[in-house]
Amino acid sequence: MITHFQWRPLYKQAALPGWRISFYFNGSHYDGIYHKSGLIEWGSAAPPKDDEELVIPQIQELMLFHVYE
Image (cartoon, rainbow, N blue to C red):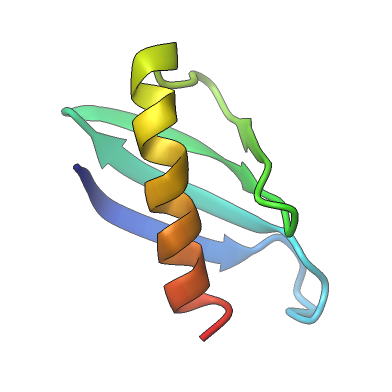
């Protein structure tokens, strides 16, 4: 489960797509850039492939809720 999810626009002009995200999953911290297409560029470390399949849909749902509401 994702905890402490945070997001902020990449650009000061919030109309431009692209957001910096960070969160914890299974006790590990992850960060990256979330693109309008739903693609995530992972920062310093990406979740293991098995976890990544669980994390990406959760992040997309959170972004839909927070950004596109």
